[in-house]
Amino acid sequence: MRLGAAIAGKMEVLKATSTPEMDTIQRKELMQRWTVVQHELMPGLSSEVGGLTPKLEKLIHTLEWVRIEEFAGSTWSGVGRPPHDRGALANAFVAKAVLGLPTTTALIERLRIDRALKRICGFPMWQRLPDESSFSRAFAGFAAAKLAERVHEALVKEYLGTALIGHISRDSTAIEAREKPVKRPSLTTEPLARKIKRGRPKKGEVREAKRKRIGQQLTQTLKEMLAELPRACDRGTKCNAQGYRNSWNGYKLHLDTADCGVPVSALLTSASVHDSQTAVPLSKMTLKRVTNLYDLMEEVVPIV
Image (tube, rainbow, N blue to C red; front, side):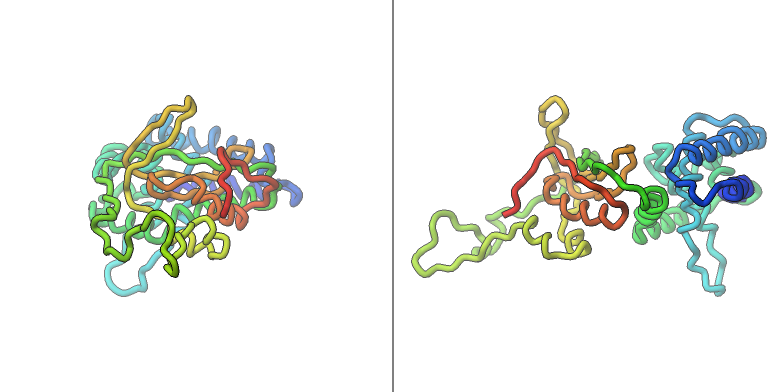
């Protein structure tokens, strides 16, 4: 029995006792859901599988709010061997991130020895876990289908879509990775026609204007903007809160955050991408999800 089904009856009671005017982002309903999970679901699950650690309690709250199993779906057409439960694999996909497990192998080992985690994810206690290859194929499918992004977008629209947001704060953070950074193309390895000539052009010489990504984004669609942003692992540099420069290998996570602290839009790019190049795509992504009055950034770059 999945976690969502375990408290479905409790949530139906909440819906029956709630008035139509009750806003989902109001404190009253938030406290109602917190009470159901904290004081009714947690004790019942603890008595069934043993004590729950703070990390497992955080995972339960996360799974209850995102309901990722409802977006996982199934690709089985009734021919051949039935696939494994996509909802349980999707819950394990979230558990890997919440528990900070670096590899899929570590996740499977934790599921084999932790009955509480196996029960929370929704795997039957009397059956063997899927093989590591099944986990890897399912996780690759979730990443290709942008499952986490779709769940996040639906969650933001459901709880903040009808609210008026005052400010959207836009900033980025470093994401370190163990991958090897890709090498940037050098001018010495490019064809002579692509070399950038310095100085004034000769009389009658026509040079191609340098492409400016920010200026082009004003006439592009969101899909075209996202396709042009670099996403490979490379090296980036960013100033911290004290004004010192920090360098890292990996990626950069760009976020649009509402006044209440909820991330509204997220975008992952290469570490070398400047924050100004993601301002227009993030603004369009946020506009499709919520209504806000102002956008705030650390620095303003004039668009030429």
